[in-house]
Image (cartoon, rainbow, N blue to C red; front, top):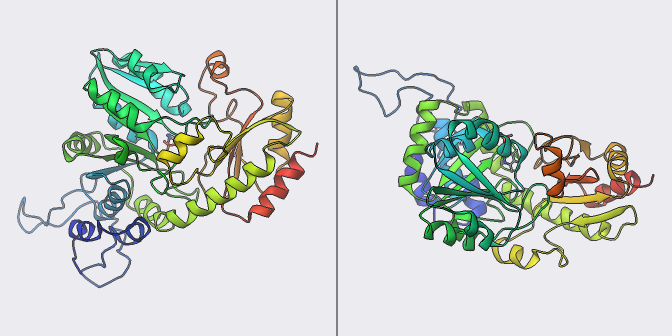
Length: 393
Ligand SMILES: *Cc1c(COP(=O)(O)O)cnc(C)c1O
């Protein structure tokens, strides 16, 4: 068996997803044969002579535990290479900072609140113009493009409204305009959606969510389709320095080994809940891309191999109804974040999306009655019973 990370990754590249999730970047330690590679906490590396080293000099620049995580992430997203960061927003920053003042980015309006805040409150002053469409028709993106558009940014399914965007069609529009397409794949994960296969140039993850999967580590990653696009991201990773720690890389990598299995159960449980509560009398509406009545179901079927673990509901009675349901659940914890093995319920208007001004938020459908469920991998019957009793008010 090959002993270096890169050989190991190449050797495994023809294998299927679940196998790669377990074996890429996990070559046994050449020094001891340890099946699980050690966590390399070292900050520095002993040199034989000045400048003569084994390819490692300082851990912000290069670290074997981080290399292992990057190798598996690149493999699972079918990219040329990956760079891991201290958080999802640090990964997003790396891509935005790669643009130049005067450039613009066209984005879908239903964005993670922190991404919107970063574009508006940090990068706008720096000289980046962000333009948003709330029409998910690819033609709407085309209308906002001009000669300074260098990037299209999207999440699909969107957060928190779970609309779908046609990655291939929007990639074609970006490329025809000489721009790149970045897809935040945090909600879907590569287990059910691989944006690079549909033409995306960059995939971004908050690995804090499904990739880590256990709500115990914050991290992020950028995966590039082409090695040439990875180069400036890797340069920035070292130059700006928001790298993930060796322990965080290790724990994230451990989570990845069960990603495939977990997503199967997340999708199964979310579908059970969606079907069960679709017509519940206390709910105004329920959204899940796996339901045939979902407006983007056909697109979801085309570009995803599963519909994910997020279900959103609008509770009757506005904020009052949503607060009641959100506070009465016992298994679903009222908390921000998503994608862990445990179920969570979140009130976007007050919790995750509070950084978006109220008028803008409401115009986009993030109303006071909206709750986002991150359906965990507990037993579906128990989750359904918990939501039933929470709605019995
Ligand atoms: C959480 C999240 C982010 C930000 O990631 P952090 O790890 O919290 O910095 C970005 N995009 C999406 C879709 C997210 O859910």
